[in-house]
Length: 265
Image 1 (tube, rainbow, N blue to C red):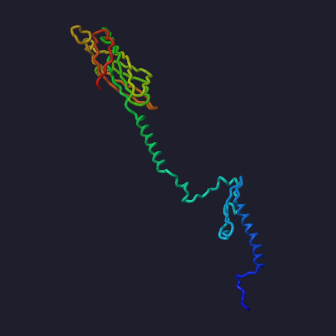
Image 2 (spheres, rainbow, N blue to C red; image 1 turned 90 degrees about the horizontal axis):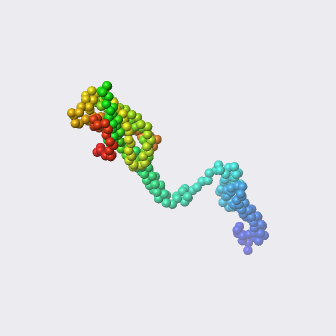
C-alpha cells in the first residue's frame, strides 16, 4: 500500500533519542529547585519560578534569582504579608480592646476620686485659758489668751500644717498679734487640735473702767479674732482664713482651762 505515514508516528530510534534529550533537562530543573529550596545559616532563601512555569516568571528583584540575600540587608528588607493572612486578624480583638478601655476608665475614676482636692475644715473651738493684768498709769489692760483650733482633713492624702497667723481686734483696732510656726502632719480623714496663745494690750479708758469698776458684776470684753492657717498637700500650698468673736472676763485675774467644746459652724 502506498499510503502516507502519520506525522505523530515515530520510529523506536527517534523516541530513544528524544528521551535522552528530555531526561537531562528534567534533572537540571530538579537540581535547580533543590538549590533554591535549601536554607543556609548565613542567608535567607527566595524561591524563584522553576520548571515548566519558569517561562512565565521573572527573577526576584531582591535576590536577582539567586535565592539568597546578604546578611547586612536582613534587617532592612520588609516582608509582605497577604491581606487575608490570619496574623492580620487576631482573635478576641474586641474583647481585649474592651478590657483595656475598662481598666483605663476604672483607674482614671479611682485616681480622680482619691486625689480630688477636698476642703480642710478650720473651726475655732473657743477660749481655753486667760490671764488679765492692769496698768493704772497707762490705763491699759494686758490680756493673755490661750485658744483652741479644730482642724479636720477631709482628703484621702496627707496634709501638713506649717504656719498659723493670728490677729486680735478690739473695736476695730489690732490689740494683739502672733505668728506660730508649726509642723502638724494630719493623716487622711483625721481631725486634730492646735493651741495658740496671744498677748493683747487694750489701751482704752472706757474698757479699763468697765474691767476695774467693782459695782459692775459682769466684766466682759468682746474681742474679734482673725486668723490664717497655711497648709500644704500634693506639692500645693493653701491658706485657710477663719474668724471668731469671744467674750473674755477681764475682772478676774485668770480663767482656768476648760474642756474642749465644739461650736456649730
